[in-house]
Amino acid sequence: MNWFIFSAALVIALGLAGFIGFLFTFARGPSVDITKQMLHPKSIYYPFRGTIGDGVEWLKKRDFEHVYIKSRDGLQLHARFLPGRSDRCIIMIHGYRSKGENDFSCACKFYHEQLGMSLLITTQRGNGRSGGNFVTFGVKERYDALSWAEYIRDRMGEHVDLFLTGVSMGASTVLMAADLPLPACTRGIIADCGFTCPEDIISDVMKKRFHLPKFPLLYLVKLYARIFGFPLETADARKSLANTSVPVQLIHGRCDAFVPCYMTEQNFAAATGEKYVFYSEPAGHGCSYLCDKEPMEKAIVEFVTLHLTNR
Image (tube, rainbow, N blue to C red):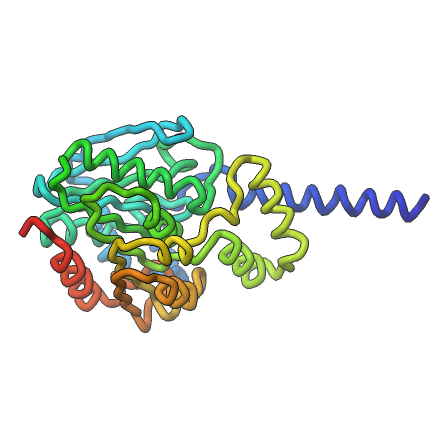
């Protein structure tokens, strides 16, 4: 009887731990505010606080149009649109519990003024003004990226040169969308520090940050994700890249302590279409543009220019 009670208690405890881990990882939560993060001297963003501040101010002065669409599963999704040239646009997808001001504050001016692009800065499901109770690590977000691409095609026309870009989970989102039926006007994908698949990044974070074993917690988290409608094993950037002809430009910082650089190496190796990679030797997570602004801009300009049909 004691063994039965012990076993039952252990199962309940593990199930509860898995459910707490699931909620901690996936449930909707407050977005990170980079303007506060960058003020802490130990933050990786602290050395770039001036540049980030300038980028945020540039965004604040722009007259964005707030736009909304319905996701394929019925959620209201939010984005901000800033017109540029009528024949080119870039869709920008932020990372985990982040927002456009965090991940693209410094790059928006470059894309808009130097490359002349219209900007669509999206808000991922489970964040900000977009609906949804869960962040799904790309499982459902990839279809949201497809919906935004269709929105731009319908709004700007079949002639538009359309690019998708993302940072961190946003990078994985656009890579996982690569083998979906994206509009024919999609010219390329730019992915900065994306992971390979949800299982890999969750396992890595559990081990490095929380010193937790993969078994049984990851499998319990996967079980709850399946129960709530987004099986983690159904999304993998490597599989998508192996089944697409959309050109990709991959980017990663060699000193990334959150998403390991080897994940971009694996994504690059898996890609069977036209592919390019840029590594920033000193950059931490999401900091390649900040650390290596000129060479990274050069790489992006070359990639975009190569695939523009509207010169």
